[in-house]
Image (cartoon, rainbow, N blue to C red; front, top):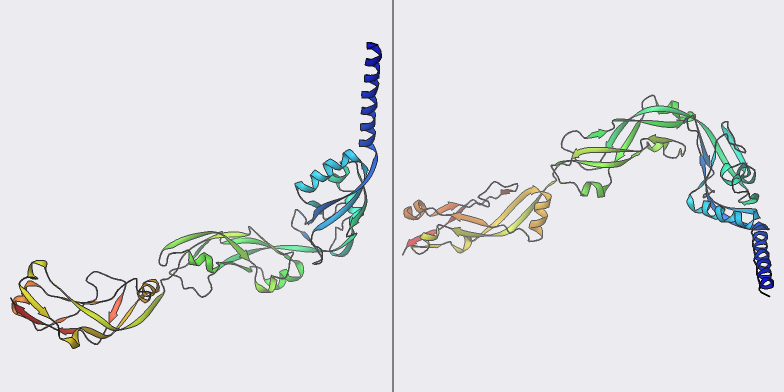
Length: 332
């Protein structure tokens, strides 16, 4: 009885394994989505570009065993499929072509390893353009828009390689220019008057070449060292208050008054770095005129004294038609 049970169990296991194997190897049809990229010549002598209508997404209809679809789906997640110039099913000489993706992908080594058959591709064809390319050495020019610089900017590398379609390489000249353009957000992070380095600034082709998609720059970025000039501005203030300053020990010995008409300076023009002027506008920096009375001024009983707006060296400059303020000094 026990031997009978063992035999039945063994037969059942073998039957199940046979069924699982048969199911895995049975012919199936399934669609898998990929991203597809066209690869230019490694020597940079030729470049390939797909038509603007092609977005890079394709659907490949496969047929084959169910087990082979697992690595196919893994392949779709790893990265794009690539079709290079001159590979089977792909053009190798300059011109415009309509590529049959089914024929090209059937010869693709990565897909052939799967053991699946490419039955169809959506879209079935892609229009491509193959262009001859020429190499030029280009000078890198720094572009900061309307910002003003202190000194000459330094860019590294100073020259780069550009690869241009043959039809525009001649008009571009033997030494074209590319531009390291600093964006407003890059410039806003720099401290005015301080020389700093901005890394990884993207290089751009001249406007006349920007629509040439096959054109490229190597390396595509550069580092720029520069100093932004401090922006200067001015502000006119009216009714600037006047205050008196003297040594603490003299406060109890003297009474000092200022005539009412001299207690405010009618008009003061403040000029200097824009960031400081902005702080004055926001009220973060208070401006006042100060009459400094020394011991000698008090003993002499001076009747007027020049007003000052800053006793320490300052980046701000003050201009006013009223410099002298009348004072009345009386000893207690």
